[in-house]
Length: 417
Image (cartoon, rainbow, N blue to C red; front, side, top):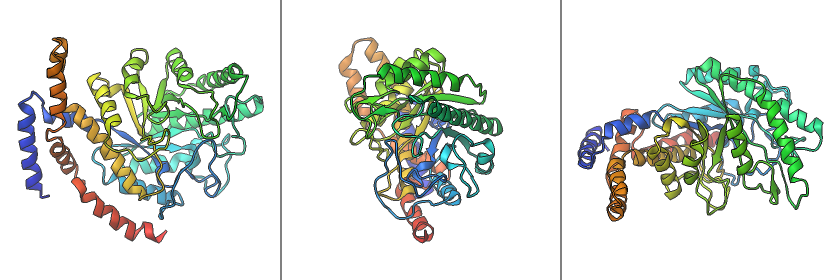
C-alpha cells in the first residue's frame, strides 16, 4: 500500500466518520496517548537470568518450543527493540525481578538492588522507553505452594524482603526515567486440595502486604494481582479477587485484573466501572484465555473489544494502566508481541471511533433499537483505514507489511541462536 493510498483512504474514512459526529483526528490523538507495557517474558518463555535453565514453578508454564528464544540480556533487549520498531506509539517495558543484570553471578531474591537494573534504566533512556516492574515469587527453592502467606515466618520474611527490594528498584526506575513505575505484586500462594486454614493464610498474606507497603516509594504505582486458581493449586488461592479488591480499596493501591484470571464466564470489562468508583486507578493485564489462564497471544476478539469500550466510554483512559501478559512459545515471539500490541490498539481505536454521543442519546431516550443498530453499524465503518494511517504517521509498517519484516529478523537473527 503506497503512502498516497493510505492518506486517501484516511481522508475518506475521516469524512465518513464525520457524518456520524466522530472526529478521527481526536481519536488518533487519544490513541497516541495510550502506552502499552510490553512484558519482557515473551522473549524467553519466562526464564530470566537468575537460573535460565531451571524449571518453571508456581503455576507458570510456557508451552511450545519454537526456535529463537532469547538466551541472555542482550538478546532480550534486541527482541524488544525489534518489536518496538513495529508497534506505533510510545510504550513501556515491564520487567520481572529475575531479569536483573547479575553479571553471571547468582544473586538471591532477597539481595537484589537497583544497581542490578541500572543497565536496564540506561537502555530504556536510550530507546525512549519507560519501565515497570514485578516481584518474582515463583521458580525458587523457597516458593513451594506459599510465599507471603506461608506458615513459616522465615519464609514470609524472605519474600517480604524480596518484594520491598523490588519496589525500591521500581522506585529508582521511576525516579530516573521521570515516569512512575507500576510495580505489580502477584504471588501464587494456594493449596492443591482442601485446606482448613483459609483465614490463617489470608491473614498472613495481609500482614505481609502491610509490611511491604509500609515502605514508601514515591515513584511507584503499586498494584496487586488476583487469581482464580493456579495449576497445582486448584482448591484454594489466598490472593483471590475479593481479597485484593478489598485490600486495594482500603489501602489506596491498584487492583490488577488479568483477563485470564477469572471464571471463564466472567468478563473483565464489567468490573472496570465498579472498581473505578472506589479506586483512583487500576492495572490491566491484557491476555487471551482460550482455556482459562492459557496466556494466548491477544487478538481482536469480543472480550478485548468490550474491555476497550468500557474504559473509553467511562472516560477512564487516564486511570487505567495497560500491561500485556502472555507467553506463547509455539510461534515467532516477536510476531506475538506485534500481533498482541496492534490488536490492543485496534480495540481502543474502535472504541474511540464509536458514535458515543448518539449512542448515549438513544439510550437516554430508551430508543433501544436505534442504540443496537448504531452499535452494529459502527463495526463495519472504515476504522482500519484510520489505524493504517496511525501506523503510517509513526513510520512503522502498515497492515500486513510487518510480517515480512519479522520473517527477515528470523532469518538474520533468531535462526542463528
